[in-house]
Image 1 (cartoon, helix red, strand yellow):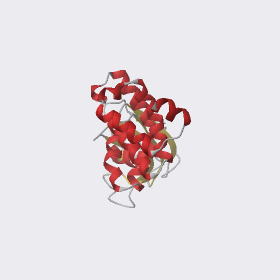
Image 2: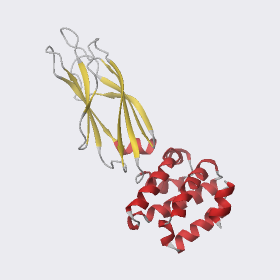
Image 3: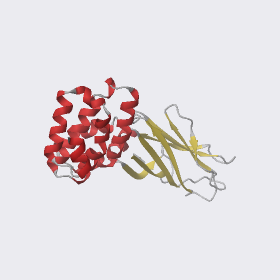
Image 4: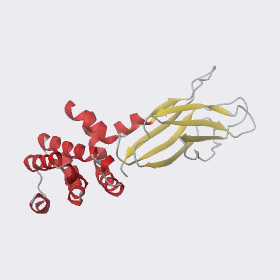
Length: 236
């Protein structure tokens, strides 16, 4: 009845969602069914457009489904996690701007959903050497994935790359760190300008993080060297 009346009308309200959550709670096997999977886009829509009470009921519904994934057939949990990934930007918003009682469940869900990490290496600053221009590039290393590398730029102490790199994950790489080293391919000067290490968990929770990151170890003479980088975690 819920599937026929609620989904057909496209109208989702708190009472319908509470009824759905009651079914999921009292009859756990329902969570692994096709109608449960088909309900997820409507739960995501409720997070986006519903009242605070409707958002809370939708969050509870997604949370109940997530709790059953370990006992579901792999193809069911996969289909449900992919459908629920559309909620990633909404969950990130709720963590930062929603009611405090939403935060724990929103964080739990974010840590289980497939997503994509995008890293944009924009430019470097103060890559100076005593003789000639350096030939600067950045090397990116994340876990056991093959290293990535920017193009080599030899236009002066402030190289510009504006290059994007993407990694797709079945679930966020919890606890992993992204290492970005800035290197000099020129035969003159030092071979490395330093390294930046980024904790991925923070990016997953916030959605987007950008700034200037100081390369370590810092220069003993002159201004510190840094990289301008933007990090994004999304369902795209």
